[in-house]
Amino acid sequence: MNTILDALASNDRGWTERAACADLGTTRFFPSESESSVAAIVVCEQCPVSSQCLGYALAHRIVDGVWGGTTKRERVRMLRMRPKQPAA
Ligand code: SF4
Image (cartoon, rainbow, N blue to C red; front, side, top):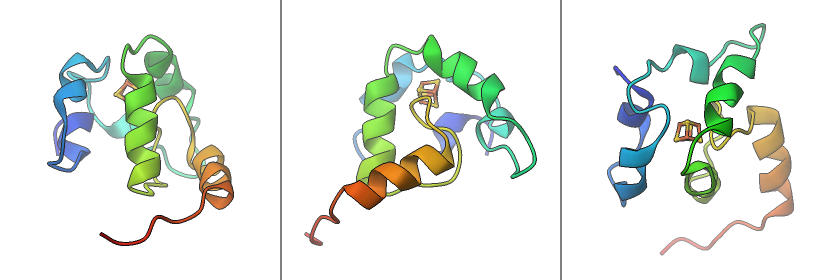
């Protein structure tokens, strides 16, 4: 896995071409429990597709890593408030 984009699934990914992290490694976006997420969030704050990124992570119930400028803890909280979608 070379970039954050490589971590994405193969569904509709057109928005990923405009991602601020397109040429960055994944390390800062997947910090360990003892590491800060700030380095990733700073990049996300400048990203033109942060809402799509967050939507993707929520739709796929991805809790690990920083997506759309949100941390694992923040997305877990969001997902608890969001009902699961029935399988298609
Ligand atoms: S919001 Fe952050 S993780 Fe998502 S595509 Fe943009 S820079 Fe990458």
